Image 1 (cartoon, one colour):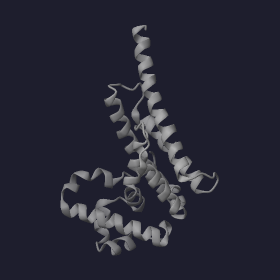
Image 2 (cartoon, helix red, strand yellow; image 1 turned 120 degrees about the vertical axis):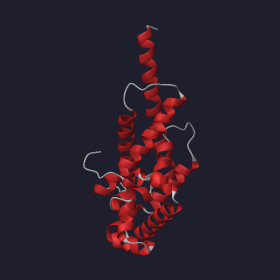
Image 3 (cartoon, one colour; image 1 turned 90 degrees about the vertical axis):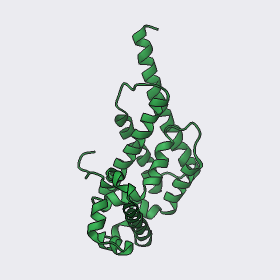
Image 4 (cartoon, helix red, strand yellow; image 1 turned 90 degrees about the horizontal axis):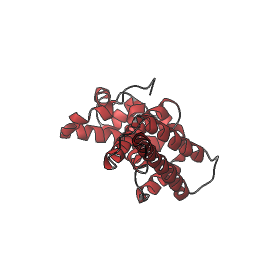
Amino acid sequence: MPGIKVLRGRLSQAAGADPRVRRSRAALTTAFTELAFERGYQDIGVRDVADRAAVGRSTLYSHFSDMNDLLAHSLDTHLGTLARCTVRLEMEPDLVRVIAHFWQQRSSARTMLQGQAGAAIACLLVRHLETALLGLYRTHRSRPSLPASLLAEQLAAGQIAVLATWLAGRAAASPEKVAQLLHRTSYAAAMASLQSVESARLSKTGR
């Protein structure tokens, strides 16, 4: 995604084997989440998060490239749940809980989905979606005719657009209905990509 800094948090997982690294990362993401809900995302800075986590600013920057990177990774579990709905036939109860959580925190969530923060979240969601799609292709022993990253970009944009519209109050629906919409449309798109692969294979064999 052009213009977005590399998400250092995702790329430093190898170092995460060190318990000290895991503790520091956990402390930083916990501190960030607490402050974001207490004050709002726009009203906290690097020093605030570092002080709450009882670490230095240099430690924060050794794990995350900036506040947007930290924001994205504080939502990592939620983004993973959104991505899984793309490849699961049955909707997970966790998806409804994630959507309901976004609604409860909608004032902060609306801000987080905009600008550079929103772009960082979208970038990480694309990574989760691409991983889920590649797993789906392996399970079905299919080789997609288009890169999984392309469908992942489309799905991420669609999921975020639905959430942003709903959280802004421009479309009324319960968290359950929004979760169902995200699951059905995302799963349908993923399965359609499998069907297109199968259709291409059959056309080559003349069947």
